[in-house]
Image 1 (cartoon, helix red, strand yellow):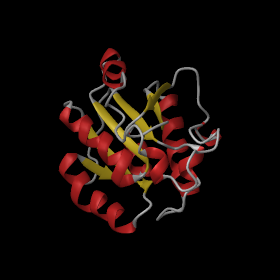
Image 2 (cartoon, one colour; image 1 turned 45 degrees about the vertical axis):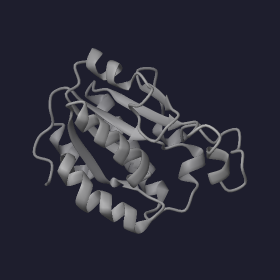
Image 3 (spheres, rainbow, N blue to C red; image 1 turned 45 degrees about the horizontal axis):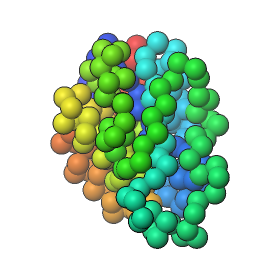
Image 4 (tube, one colour; image 1 turned 120 degrees about the vertical axis):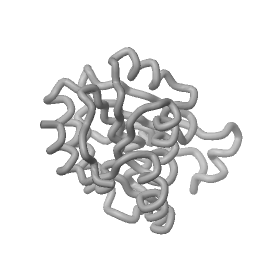
Length: 183
């Protein structure tokens, strides 16, 4: 369902737009996803709304290195891409698992600011973004996904999230439509 409205206290959560992930081959060009994420971030900041930048530094203990080609990631793997133009007022969430809520203070940070709705973007659609959106829904937030600001490493997984999962969690729309709803 297209996005119909945004709550007065909506936050933007951009998941895993970091050097090590944006450099992987994705279904839609990562550079375009990053550019849309940066555009959303600027629109939210200009309206005084919270921007959350999420990066991932780990996985299940003892298993992450086995799944990553080449073993240990480069030193800058978890650094956010510079295009996001991180600002002092942005909330940084560093996670160890797929979802941005598990084992982090994200929920407390959002509740402290009175946030009732979250707009999501990032990589990978079916992993970090979907896990975070599911948790947001379970925590009682209204969920909106900027579907042109997400991409995945797998086309079928991306399509499943966008067509089957996200519409069950909330609303979906384009970056431009969501910015238009900010007023």
